[in-house]
Length: 398
Ligand code: AMP
Image 1 (cartoon, rainbow, N blue to C red):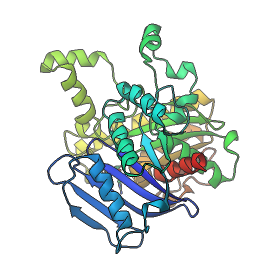
Image 2: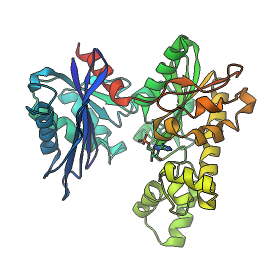
Image 3: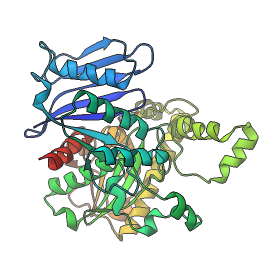
Image 4: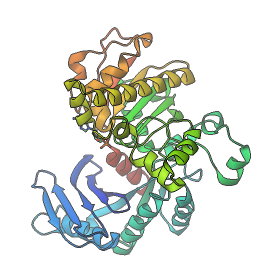
């Protein structure tokens, strides 16, 4: 079956068409600046030339129409007609407590996703726009929602509750949800598969280090803790997000800088993290890494603080699981950043970890990067959220 995977943001839309039998990507692309001047679609058929077309996209329905036109185009398309697409899998950011698994989308599910929008006001409405646009253009094609939060729904109460008045949980469902669940699930399962060990027998820590970053503890095949919280702002230091901090800092800075709550949250989401720590040098780890090697103190400060925080979470999750067998690095930085992996693992001698520097310099492979005598294994596993969404979609539609 050919599955169209859609990841819809407020002004962008990523897509991949995946053949579920071969698990290969047949075509992929991106619509940018939807609803803004200068909209552009990038389309890459597997083995073909990448095309960029600047064309008006007043809304997401038009963006999806352009995606479907590109996929069925006589010359560069990869399917003859839309009937060849057996299902659509949608990434949905927040499933609240309602969705612990992926679901086939119907009117009730759409209502439930709407109800969760309160918890993810920037993401869920955009995901719903994508769902509704596909419904309009492909009314007879089954669609599945795959939630970023679902994998983490197995966390025990002690991991998901905050030290706040319990009534906030009862009234407003204020709790840890966690994100990047599709990636944490895919990577932890893939690690067990590569090692040839039953998933249910392992204690795994997954470090998803991309522009957004989160860590999860997966014990005996179930997520028992994760670093992101009610929103994706909590946890690790990220590209531009602060991660954990003393909440009283907000009031202190608000008074000093004369900022209101929206402005403060904007600082924590967009101007903090590695970007803020490096004195606005960059939020991109390629720049931070080269600055680090050039001896730039701003880059060294950002890199050192970032890696220390990752190592602290690994320590915490080792305690939470009473041990760890495998630590996995994934996503843009985790997969491509040998320096980050090396600086993090420098803290982990107590776990009997020695990195094999040659293996640590490899990219894009599912491999163990520790020496054979290491007590705990460290792996790089390139994440593939689109494939994971396609698998979930096929499993429900078949
Ligand atoms: P993601 O959100 O998973 O797409 O990750 C994006 C981030 O990965 C970028 O902001 C970069 O900081 C980082 N990244 C990508 N390629 C490299 C690389 N070759 N070396 C270090 N970091 C990289």
